[in-house]
Amino acid sequence: MATFRIKVQKQRSDGYWPVYIRVIHQRESFFIKTDKVVDNSGIVKSTKEVKDPFVCKFCNIKITEYVDMLNKVDISTWNVKDVVTYLKKGAEDICFSDYARKYHDELYNTGHERNARTYELAQQNMELYAGTNKIMFSHLTSTFLNGWIKSLSHTSRAKEQYPVCMRQVFKQALLEFNDYDTGLIRITTNPWLKVKIPKADTPEKRAITMQECRAFFSAPLPESDRKYPLAELGQDVAMLSLCLAGINTVDIYFLKKKDYHDGLICYERRKTRAARTDHAYFEIRVPSIIQPIIDKYLDKTDSEYLFVFQKRLSSYDSFNANVNIGIRQICMDVLNIPRESAYSIYTFRHTWATVAQNNCGATLAEVDFGLNHAHKTKLARTYVKIDFTPAWELNEKVIEKIFFTEEQTNEHEVKVDPHFGRFSFKQLIKGTLYYRGKVMVTIEDVGFNNVEQVIIELMKQLPKTVPSRSMVQIRIENKDKQQTQDYTRMVR
Image 1 (tube, rainbow, N blue to C red):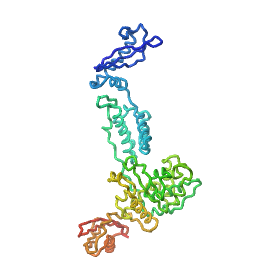
Image 2: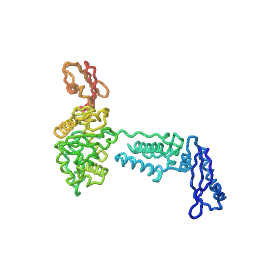
Image 3: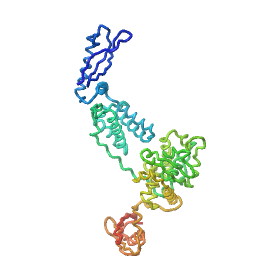
Image 4: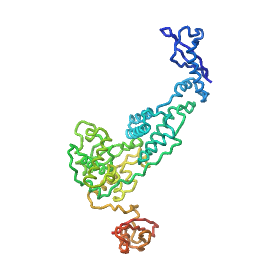
């Protein structure tokens, strides 16, 4: 157990002696300075111990507090500096808000701007709920956290994202402030153990049909008295995103002149570059269809950035918000789409992926590659010089389907593995059509070359009693390959 003495060390120039509490532990000593002083009459000069009764009373009260603190912990493995650190800071409450600010500031400084912004918003929301920007660790009880999470229940994503961020800050604080090897524990509780974080809502598919996409990009822009109309910005940036394989607005905003050369845009996806060993590097060939838009927004000054968006809008957040406002204006004012169903910039990234898979025959792996998603072969990506040509070719196919054909997306058809439809006319195929679960038509024969031929034959034999615009289900079986696939069709 540590022992304590009330001592002085050196006399000041004004003749007074500062008073210290000497801590002795494991044959080492350390002096804790107090705010008291004594004159020569208040000390024993031979031992430098304090005898002033008022100062001794104050110091003995502090020593009693120290002993009480040390009795609550195991200090057998501590050195004297550990003991003093605990006595000075162990009873102090730590400010969670200050620590969280430090945490997301470090994220900003290390280039994780998007993550830092999420952590910042999560902290601001928690402080708004608490009614203070000085939340202490002692305030973070399970009751407080559960109440805060409940206040987020109306959100679709923040109810999971914000608590996860704040829990991560708390975990990092435990590692920084608590020394589990020596038992020096400054944060004594973990309320997150009693907190259940809800799952975010599954986002709705944002893709639109090819015909809806054509209608959006052919829509006449609404009148505007602004120098830079938002509807024009929204339509142009949506076109850039769609025709550059679903590139995100944050990547468009931060593109630099050095990223654009030889007809290629080469960039690192900001959302995932810090988390991937290949830095999410990607190259996309610029299709001629969007060359006028690129030329329209090129920054022709000595700025390092490729587009003028950096000068017109102060931050990526404002750029993204203005783009979405412009897209919404077209939807509501021109296409008569209600506000709750209006498109956003992400609509066109999702549409690119959907058209690529459903209408261009791309596999999900090929779609992921084109969207610059992380892949299970991420280690190989750090060794292999990637050929991005397949993504360019797929991008051209998507552009061709949307802008240079009149093909329509059948919203009611369930898209399936394209390989199933490739069967030989010699193979035995069975088709069954159901209406409200009842078998209405069955055929079993050879001579079919693809799925559509089977469906057309089934629909021809559909009884007239089935109302038009009703949905029917179709099951097709390849008897020779033992394969089965299901489809849905609308009765015309």
